[in-house]
Image 1 (cartoon, rainbow, N blue to C red):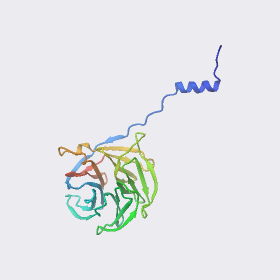
Image 2: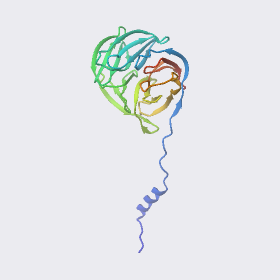
Image 3: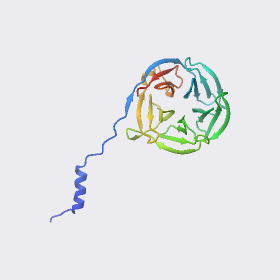
Image 4: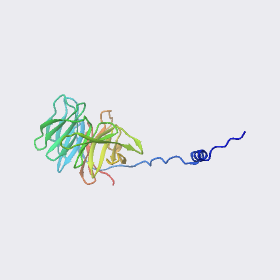
Length: 254
């Protein structure tokens, strides 16, 4: 007894046999920073974010009962002024928006708005809890330790949309402190010694910054993860970690 496949079915079977497997996504490039200067950093600062505003540098620190918003001298690391958060709040990332500083909270669906000139708390705003925050000139972008970036109305902080982040074509996670630069978003890739640069339009990571060479302080505990990045000028950035004794002014290759 003979058996013959219909022509259409036979063609599908042949295609399945001879078709090559789909191409895998090419790994994104990895670069390393060039250290320009080292700056003392308060080893007691559980750093949750840095943001530069002209010549001024602001740092958010975390932990319940210890969280602060600080203005820090970018050349010496000295704390110029600071404001304590209420003890029940765990401070997270910050962004400068005009004359305000907006700050996320951990485990509270609130954001804090500070007067930039006085570091006086203006108001608390309902908002999604988060880890990292940056301002791209028209909207606020946040992270929450997952593989998502979230987009918010700059005035109300209402969530407007989100995008899933991928690296080498695969979902990622651990997105932490953010920095918006020239239409792209740098994110600390917790808990690794890396920052990733993300195209917020697609969620695709296009550059990985390996900063593992920056730690040189002997024994390191699990708390001392890389955490904070701020653009200072052009390709120069300031990078530090939680409870690190130094910050690093670096150049990032284009």
